[in-house]
Image 1: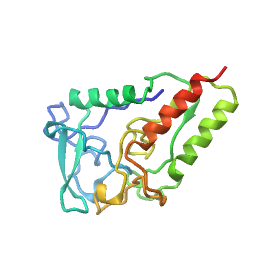
Image 2: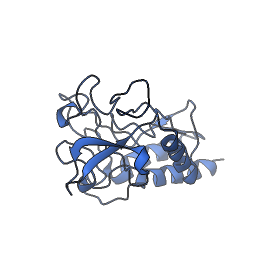
Image 3: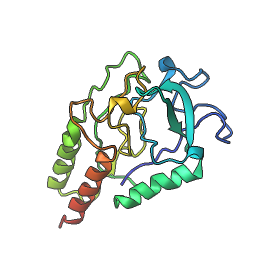
Image 4: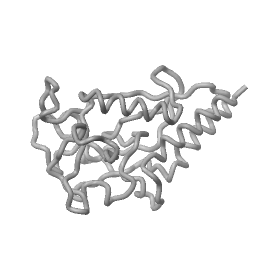
Length: 197
């Protein structure tokens, strides 16, 4: 099971906030120094009306884009991703997470202090939970990019993320992984849970 925050907003998205919410520090202009997230979402499958331009740039020189959870198309897409990988919704149970980093939200904090290690950190937790006999797990979190625990599709390489800020991309630990790697791992964890006696 995954929690879904859905609290990300962008200027001009039609939300009452009409501002960057959770992506950049509230009340500040969007800029590398006000970025609050440590992971960058993979927006390649989103349609043009689901994307929000930022002032940041990708390695290619293209404008870096984000999304707003105020857009029902995007939220529907995120829940479709959960369905495609056979993942369930929200509840309370033992928590597993892929790694942790919140340097951009807390600049004094180290960058990537709990590395993902290509999924081995996550899978070790799943294995221990299965050995303990758990039949349900809570995956923290589907869209938690500000604390670097996001499991949804994120930037696979540095070239897929803005270059002027430190971000945890899936190659940060020296491994080349697809943007949906953690959805795949979560799907395998779900299958293993279903085999539990």
